[in-house]
Length: 528
Image 1 (cartoon, rainbow, N blue to C red):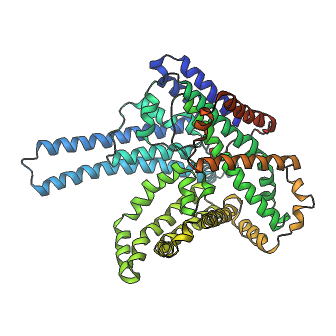
Image 2 (cartoon, one colour):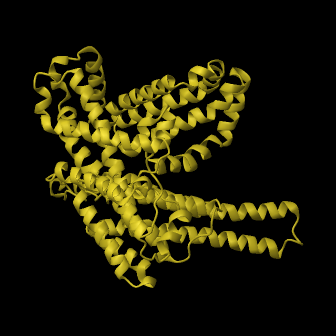
Image 3 (tube, rainbow, N blue to C red):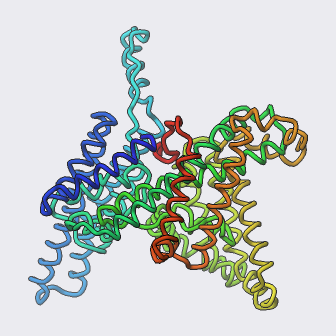
């Protein structure tokens, strides 16, 4: 889905939402979401329906098994011994566990096959026709990968895990649950919502609120600026250098990595701003997904600010369950005895970080560069967890230094460097390219390519570089204000009318003058 299509869809949906009768607005959102999603093909609709119905039915069955077990326990409490009560609880939990794992494996298995083995039907067809001696006649079958399948799968499985853990009761109404899974703004690239936070908002009919409209439109303008002025303008240079890295020296490669850092952030966070602002037009507030990640003071801080909803999902449903398992607890106790209390206490977090980022890397793609990217981040975070006691002692001994602005700037720049080294692996097509580009960056800089006209052959004109520079200054200034606790939208709306309109019209004019008009590019993370 292109930026323009998303923008027009969000605006049209908001208009139709308020035209629709108050009591039917939830129904409208469900129908609109499914009609929009069906535009990506009937197969896409079939897959999201399968995930929705299996998760809804599975959670409902888990809830009913638990309710029956609880009722039986209550009815027979007086006649059952303590051991019999425990046995009854274990039997109830065991039945719930069977349903839970069946639904979990079905949906994550489907995600894995669609993302990583899309050619499976073709392979099976060739094998079958080969047995009949007609391998050449086998049809070239390939699975269709639905739009945003990772996001709605994670969202639905998070709901299933919460129901299984007793966080809340299962939703009995299938239409309400279907809307939670298919709500179109966040379906494309997140954020990954929790049912208790988003579900009630979707089924509550929201009345027209001028403040929501103003704030939503401002956020959409900001997202459009990031996507169409910055990301789409930087994209050609990123594609040119990463598409043919052997042609350029290390200085140009480093510039392309920095450009990718800017382009990826502007693309992803800009898209999130668009959908969040669009939802806000209808009075629906999505969870924040970015919090100025390039102001982070550590790699852990960066990942708490970047794709926040995915990080929270991994933390709650992978990191903590893994770190608290009995084998990891035993390993931690053994490490305390052999290597000291600090090391043993930090070991579960270190192992958990490696596992989480290995999974995140594989989620990006089952290729060597993504696995290396995941391990790179996981190992650094693991080392940071193990060295945390040393960091604390250093902070206690050098409190004045640690609290100084210079040390803060050093930590931000250090984190920025660490993150950008990781982007080599994230953006390259092959692992060998990543290592080759890193090597050329430090051993063959060829600085002359920065000034001999090579930069102007990468799809960005000199005027384009000037616009990118000005846009980056604007992006940095707004982010710095937010980092200091200033709500920029509230700040603008609280100004006197002439000042407010001067700021808004200046931004609108800047976007109208410098947006990239012909780029029909979609969003990076829609493919996930």
